[in-house]
Length: 87
Ligand SMILES: [Zn+2]
Image (cartoon, rainbow, N blue to C red; front, side, top):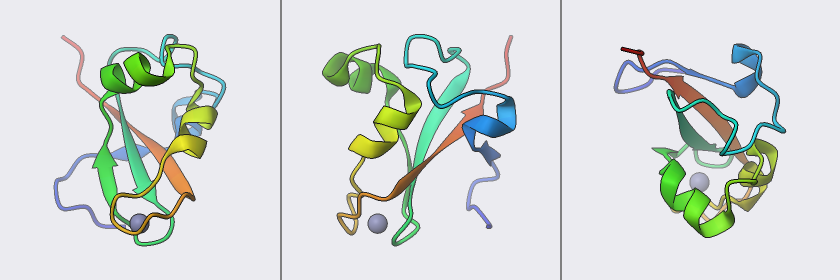
């Protein structure tokens, strides 16, 4: 799937990460993105605001279930990770 900005998004498994990783255990250099399974809408998620709202113990699997697409209201969403370059 083509993406407008050329960032590489990979499901957690692609990095050897399990979905039971939580907002607390997921390394800081990963940016979480959500992609709608209905309309394909894709958006980066603010980890800190999610953690503040839902708690740091929220797992990636749990987060995926809570997401709701802003465009179409669909709840079948996929989490993808962007790996930021580390200094
Ligand atoms: Zn959607």
